[in-house]
Image (tube, rainbow, N blue to C red; front, side, top):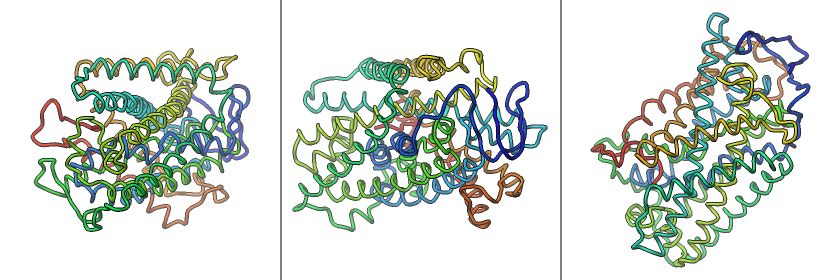
Amino acid sequence: MRFAHDFVEFTRGEGLIEQIQFKDLLIQGEGARQMTKLETISASWVICDSWAGIAGTMSLAIAQGGPVTLVYGPILTLILVGACALTLAELASVYPTAGGQYHWTSILAPKSVNRALSYCCGMTNVFSWIAICTGIAIIPAQLIVGIALFYNPTYTPQAWHYFLIYQAINGLVLLYNITLLKRSLWIHDVAFFATLTSFFVITITCVARSSSNYQPSVSVWGTFINDSGWSSGGIAFLTGLVTPNYMYAGIDGALHLAEECENASTVVPRALISTLLIGFVSSFTFIIAMLYCTNDLSTVVTSATEVPIFEMWYQATRSDVAATVFVVVLCCAAVFALIGAQQTASRLTWSLARDRAIIGSKWLSEIHPKFEVPVWGLIFNFVIMFIIGCIYLGSSSAFNAFIGSGLVLQHISYAIPAALLMYRKRSEMWLPRDRTFRLPSVAGWSVNAITIGFAILVVIFYDFPTVLPVTSSNMSKLHG
């Protein structure tokens, strides 16, 4: 594999890439560009699938601020994550590589520390993506068990029930990604339009069925619920931001598909921004509609189904059949997201192996000649996800804590290149003037600083216990 470009030649060292910068990346040999603009944007969106993401993790926000967190949290995260996305978009327009953040770190960091810092950033990003895949894979298991509980209240779910469903879905998606994905990249387009259509159908149905029983606006826009045990409402709100932030989990997905898409320096920034904006509009509209249509939030939290959104849909439609169908649709959305997430995570692992920065690089860096995907990279990530799934059998709290770490690690990987870009004073040597995505100087400095500040906030408050007093059953619980 050789990198070629028309700005400044850069080379590889013994381990991670060493020098400097380039204007446009071309891949020669393995990994031909096959993804169209729409497929890249669709894959980026499907991984986040923001309205489904917030629907699947709603219980935490209900206890950590209630409607206030659910309504104003997405607005705040639009600003904060938006700054991260703009920072990533600028760098991607100059350095479109599968390595993304860790490549940029290697390029921007002082030579004395660039290898170590790049390695730390790369491993942080890899484990954040494995955590994201894990968090997505457990959602269908929770939804399926929730349906069983709704129709059979005497059923007592066991940890191994979740475990088997989680591993089965994870394994089936792995087989699809290895054998069929390269021959059916249109699956991302199908998922994109299917999930957006589902959003419209579900939202309109709930609004129409609840037309005679809407909640008062003061309840939707002004009710603050603090069932967390924290005496400070501010801490409750900040820890509850995990839910609206989770709707952007994996927003850097397009970065790691850069070497598979056409005209990456233009398409990847567009994919980032479109994912951010479509995600906000859909999730904000969805949550406002659900709050107007939900009669009793306390029942939602304590629902026997263990799936809060099931209870919300049941209250909105007054139909167990409609609620069940909607949950099945949400389950399908999660599977679509897992396909994209596994694909993206494997490309990041492959990139690290290509730079000889991970154990087993000789095998992990291979592209299968028939399937045209990094098969060993996919299997490597699957094995780690399988092991993490085994943790669920012993402690769901430990499992949930690992999922929650994904957001923290993700924002750390954003902050490192942002800080280095500011260290380089956003010089034209590192951000050429003629890049395809360019922010005004003040805006660029601002979004870089916000990216760093948000990472600090996430590291502090997302590690706080979500409920006091802390017990083995509520520690670091992300999914309800």
